[in-house]
Image 1 (cartoon, rainbow, N blue to C red):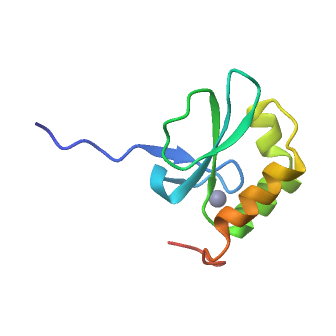
Image 2: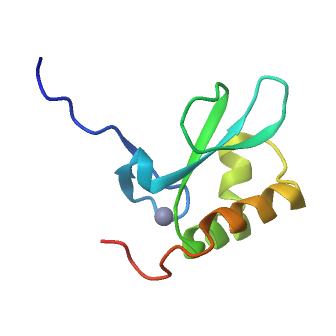
Length: 94
Ligand SMILES: [Zn+2]
């Protein structure tokens, strides 16, 4: 078996390409629900943000997440996002 490349996804905030595990995936399910998807298993329209506050803040403020997902972010969703990246390093991960 050949070694497979790590799949890269683009952060909607800083546009950096990172391995999926370094990003938070937000999914709009076919039911129109927004969920945080840590395992990349939820089906639906997804968008990715780096696992750091800076990018979450930028993605929310710039509305890039909403544009990517074509849905309004709820306060609960924004809270969940911030909670998810709490404790993550503030600076650049590279
Ligand atoms: Zn980012």
